[in-house]
Length: 616
Image (cartoon, rainbow, N blue to C red):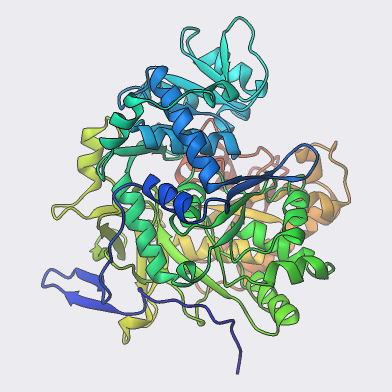
């Protein structure tokens, strides 16, 4: 019998099932949501009193040593900086904009803003450092009208010069900006908390806006999700009841996930703060350049729960093949692993289990969840030892799940209602109204199905997006989600993602987004070789030809038979909304901006060097 490490879980193991006459189904956890605090900063105050010297956050300094900030010290910093923010004129109408990535200073500013009742706006660093036109940054700053902009350093100078008015205060961790007066973060720490801060903090309550988290803006301008203290606290209590071990011992996280996204911020920072844990900021990420830092940190720090995106888990699993120190440290006390952002391939899943068994003699659970920015984020969890890719489980305590048949796609949409669901989008009343149904359930656009229709207690499985599927000219439905997952799995490790084509056409096609570092490795090519030339190397052409042949011959019908493939030599554009800063691909945006390429692909243009047709 397979052994799993003991992990105290619950909350989402059983659900009440209410089948309605209109065909919809409402699910509720059989476990009630328990008490939670009114403000997330109440947790900071609690732990500062109970465990004042315990580290809340740590990050490596330039020497490589960990710099720690304890709970009591963080509370002192938060109160000082909170006063400084009020002195700078910030308020509910004049929020704090944060351009920086994950660092101690931006965490301090975020907590200080919440303490003082000032919303903060964490903005993707890619909008400042990757974007060429700063369009999304300009839009977010325009719609939020911040009173102060914070950035960690002078690398943000071009973005600030292009988008921030010269009379708007800018705070930097270090450095200066041309032709602009700046304040430094250390100056804010010198402020003395006074009556104004005490009065402002006393007014903060469950409905107070803690932050505005912006969606990726794949098909339109990014939307600001109003995130209240109630949403954050309620969701953290839900997570604690599902992952009960979080309350048994202080959680330790080693985490890089960006704080402008709900998973890295509301979920992961929330887990640490709500349960009195410690966050080690990982300055790495799952890229060829960044993975070395992640591996370095995981060789040194043993997390009790570990989060990453599938690519990160795949790279870590591969590294553990030859690195027993990494393997043994990672699994030494880890109760649970969890991923988000895409599907984790079964090969990586199996490899993680094998490494855990080699390190500690038992497997570590890989749990899954379904949530989104609008729900702060988690609404369902799958926490059993039989969880597999795609499972999303049953509702968290306090969340009502509504399953609604979608006649257009033939799928079932999942909708959510509960104290963790947003009140709406910032200054978008019409879009907000469209986002909810007549009963107040948030319309996700995500589709699910039963794992076992005969046994609803086994939970739900993710089934793609209701709006992604389309019909061929024959009228046959193409189920995009499973086909896309199949192509990515078959193309491992050289396929990052796939965009499915064929609306009103006779055949299914695919635009393949290559994983460039793996393609370079396959071709034994250096970083100086341009991508178009790289894709013409014989080993690369052979790989994608074999993939096209496999997809053709293993298909079961016209809706799953890939008849033509184009390997993209032009990477997806963040400015056009084709890709988010997490690397997630938006199918609709890619198809919109590359309509001419798709047309040429179906015309069978022989001059297209990146078109691959299967050998039929």
